[in-house]
Length: 248
Image (tube, rainbow, N blue to C red; front, side, top):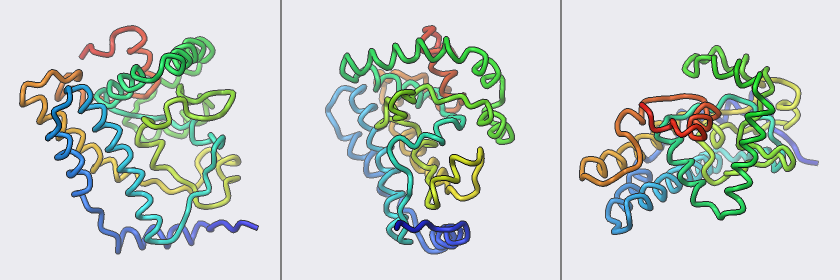
């Protein structure tokens, strides 16, 4: 029978990470340095950097988990966390959507068709959710209580439709206790967030874009304003579908 960590055991391991584990920013910097040496087209460099830095967040979490000997109990089809508000910058949204545009045609059209139904079926909930301040942490529970699914969640499979480019909040929220806590509570205390890794990821992706921008490269983001404008993922998708995502 599988055993699960209890809340205190999770706290103890997280405290060990805080006190004894040193994050090496060099692993993120190395990705940027490698990309800036590339002769590839600028868009390819940006999108590859976006993907590699997201992957590096996953790798860093794995290193921390190994350090304290714990493994998450999240599993495919467990989508309770896919009802939390996902906030990201306009810059990240543009990179995410441009990445989706490079998906194979069938997969891409499935996502676009899903969005069409999503915004029609969730009109009322979206109207209420998108009026909440994305920078106010107090609204998180109210948003979760709406039971509004992420626009990337496939309602049939309960899987992410763009898993490899899912945003940082989706990658950094993990449960090491019994998975039932996520099913039974809107805001369970047991799951742990590694969202502090956003600082390292964002610093690196920001540096990549800044250098390309200052070198006169044709990046597809409005730098630096896109880097500091935040909203909910459904709000950015709505703007993308309307053709207004590039409006500052």
